[in-house]
Length: 476
Ligand SMILES: *Cc1c(COP(=O)(O)O)cnc(C)c1O
Image 1 (cartoon, protein in one colour):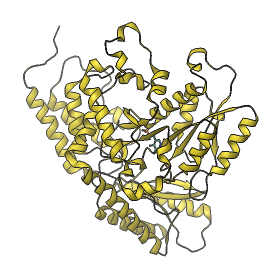
Image 2: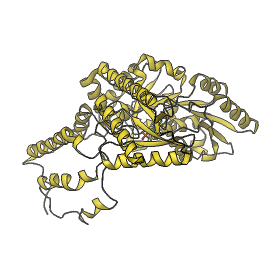
Image 3: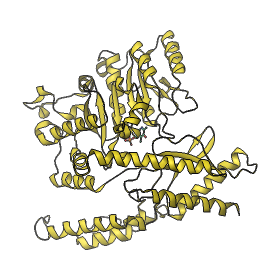
Image 4: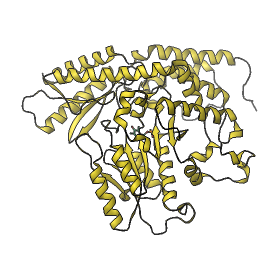
């Protein structure tokens, strides 16, 4: 039998891989932003079984160029302006590389004390960076979705005196609330935890896409009259479609009055809490029982890195701790085993990448980046406003602008929707930029997110020119 190679040209191989990455990152803007592949194209180029004999690194690298790159949508392209970004800066890349190099699994404190302690420390740095209260403890979760599930679980156990974990549901009807603009992960959590999608009330929003707190109040009162048990409310700082902001102060008052856990989903926009002017938009956020912010969206850190903070660490741990014999350690009493915080047992050493980002860039540069992007979004929105044939569908929020083409001459709503749908489609097929859409009050809106790691005003201006010329072409 052949053995695994682990000696000879390793340095050479690592150098070649790093060289390839460097080359890619330096030329990423030469690629079409959206992959031009058709379904099945990549699979067709791949062999049907793994090779029996190990191959050469050069062959692997060749296939990266030949097979993989054509199937890549380039999230690190400065003109990637769709969804929300998944920023993977170079500093973060170094952190990922080091984590992979160490190859540790930090489920228990003693399985790598540095993994646990660095994580707790950098989460505290982030807490301060975002101006969150002193009594929040933070850990890294793999996604905002998982963090929301964990928060809802802890709330469920708090509401049932820890009984549901043991006995299952005992006839009580637990009710959760969010706005109709909340992220689908809230409903997913309700499904996973057996709350049931129908027991998640989706409260209507006002014209700013913010939860209508009067409607929340009415729903809670009605549910209690029926003998149901309201236990959890998600309030959003930056909804996914339009970056709407829920009214935390009133929601928190209602939550406290009826004993509900208030979870704040700030997955995207939370990164901008480093700016004092943004904190003003978030008054009452510090009343949250838990809050989730994704550095893997808007803080230059590779997916996956979700910052999850709570002021009830023991509620989280009590609902998730399970210590079979083989996981027992001498340090269990100190409560430093981060496996007790999440759905999985194993944990990657994710703190390294956010540590590298914070150290190599510094918080001043990170704040400046976010502030610049918000300025550019406002500047772009002003140009839309001034243009006779384009219009804003919401005021710009953070670095997101929702707008549409409306060439004024008597188009009805459906025709306008088709016009804008086609416009985005053609833009994305051109490979020159990538934008996505949302629907606001039945109107198809183009979403421009100015949040890519390397985006500059010049990129915004070029995409804006492109949109205008394609829109005119489309009519002629
Ligand atoms: C992106 C997003 C999520 C989901 O984030 P994951 O980390 O991918 O689970 C949740 N809520 C909001 C508001 C988001 O923008």
